[in-house]
Image (cartoon, rainbow, N blue to C red):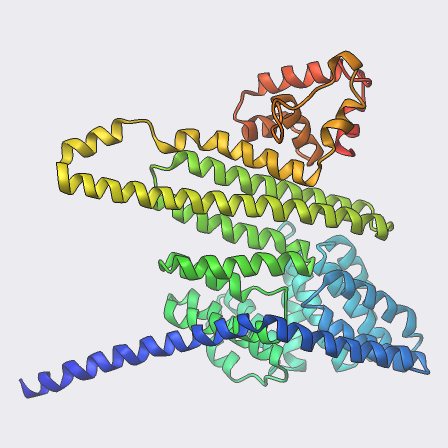
Length: 503
């Protein structure tokens, strides 16, 4: 009995200590997030110093070294700047074996990051590995693992090449954090037992970025083992490192947000996810947009599963994500097709970014409003249950749902957001319509059904089935509206959709 008396306080102290441990790491991450602007300024200062070295350099070799330093910074911050820097490295490297090898490996790596997998594979196979310095070999193996890994999804024969390049890397430097983790992944795929945690902890962490990666890889391993608390701890440490490095293209924070959401820490998860979305867009890593959006979509699916009665809200949220995804796809197609016209592409990308921001803000506002309404509704049900009994609750449930009017509100938000981006859209449309069939808005700031169809085409959503889903009408109705619009336009036979899409 005496032992029990002492054991109970000790147990509470242990629980309190564990709680403080977790809260301390969240507090450290939150402080790092608050200081993002400070870290960004420090990052800009380092960039400026390297650019000054470049501009003052007297030789191509010295200029190349400055560019290589910039490439290391840009890789996790801005893909456009990174690509431009690598191209300059290729132009300046000359016949220097080290500089040429590193430049070619960096080029293959950045193409992979830009999702140009076919081009990346072609360039990767052209790299001469004879007498390749170790500095270039690390980049070469890193790029090869990811390129072959992506190709293996559709062509399994590339899996052999992926394993071969990791074996080569492992023999060269088994203490490098990326190499150790990927080696463990490959060994597990072969069916070999491998203590990845021990391998990662034994690595030589050369840079702060290595520390961020080590914590991220440990979190992934603990998550696979079902040790959620350890996974959250290491995701938090990795995210804190990313913040202090002023990185914009990272994985740890949004995976942490997803994990916290599944554990019920919704407020913190929402805050971290907002930061993830903002930084993903600012980094211009379009290949990462799908990852972030997919994670957010998974969060919303979990939320909607817990709140089954909100089916209309589910449709609204999916529609918002569909719009964002469609805009992202349009942006990617534009950048890919017109990469040689950088100035025009950048203007288009800025426009698309504005669309994303507006519709993301609209979506988040609707979600928060809906969740607040759900909380109010549940509170009213509990009060009614307590005061008037089950019969009164049943009567409330038979009334029309507050969600019935949500769709009209969502369309109103769509009109406001769209006209905020394209205020002269209606005037431009009317320039391409026969005079007697020119259209106006039913009221200021409100689009008619015909104008909404054309607005979606302007945003890149041209398939009738998708337009029908977004506007909650039948495909036949959409076809009827579109046919009349085209028939009464100045281009009744062809080219109507293309003209609208480029207004």
